[in-house]
Image 1 (cartoon, one colour):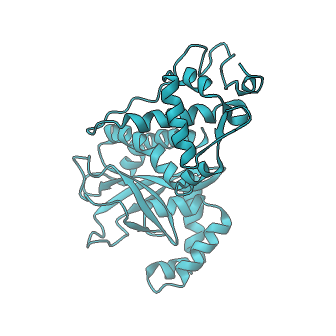
Image 2 (tube, one colour):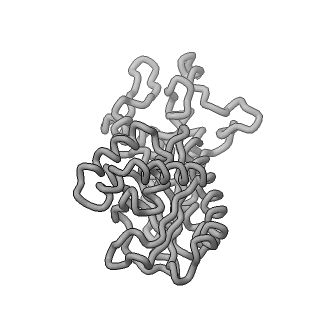
Image 3 (cartoon, rainbow, N blue to C red):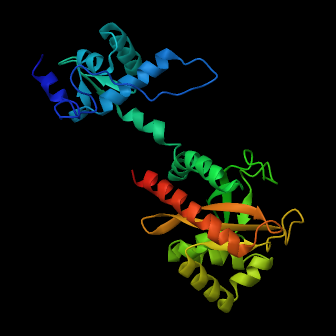
Length: 292
């Protein structure tokens, strides 16, 4: 091995229980799909991931072949392709490879909010099995929250099949109340400023200091928000109830998870007793995923 190649020791190689033990083969997570997997792409990603884990971010094609379990010729061909596309750089002095600056472009369109949705989806599936009623994951969008993920399409008790993209009023919904009660103070003031500039019911509520003081005190003390049909959407005022918990990151809300139900079927106190513990467990899992 060249002296330079000795610097490409990868994370975990010498550890007692390494991610890549000597002689071990790096495996990508198993994924089931109705479409056939593109093996070339999968192998290329294996090579990128292995290269990313190398100390000093560089490795020889032989080292990468050992780490990935792929044939050395295959690895070399993949590396040359990545070099031609600008994602990997090859050193002429020692023929080692390292990631190029262009790999950062792959994450430009991915935001923290997208990560929340990714982490939350499986947790919401488990929540559905516990409560049966549908749940929504909503994230801030200006002066409102926007539903980014939902289990409505899977719940036998769903009354709205199309929820993703729907905007939720901040002061009239359980999710909005939970969010504004737990977001950063500067963000809260900006949201209220936007609401006061409107000409609807929320403008009046956002301009009422007594209402706001009572709302914030209640939500912050309870740790969750509720609504009992206050939002008149699709002529449903008085019909739909919800309870929502904030998803916290660094102590402030970054989104909300809510369970939605029919008021004629579930009383508010029963919803709190039955759904808040399940929601809290789900939120803890989501928050753990965000901090991982």
